[in-house]
Image (cartoon, rainbow, N blue to C red):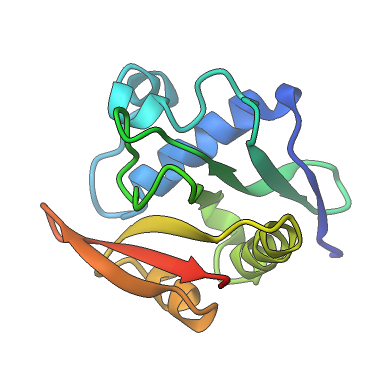
Length: 164
């Protein structure tokens, strides 16, 4: 099947929230929280609350069926309300999730490349993210040029891709 990538819109909020839950609870062997439970957690909900805010940009991946299988989005956070991967208020933070049945098929790679290209073209200084050290997506981020810039409590690493 052919993978299509399109810009995320306001109507994609529910899917972004579902992908936020996938990203937060990516380990198949561990308990998962529902999307509603995730959205009740302020430290997670702020990744999608009020989508889209000024400066937000995102991509949705779909196969020919127009059923979304993945999303990646960028959001700016203020220093007073940082995300897990916060490095600076001028650097947006990446969130990305792919439905389990579509993982390992290049969906995340395609979404990531699209956001990197768009961010570089827009003149942004870079992109940051947070990823747990044992998450298989970490390798994807490293291959794209993200470098560790800090460790978080609980075993996650903050990574940044700088364009300048």
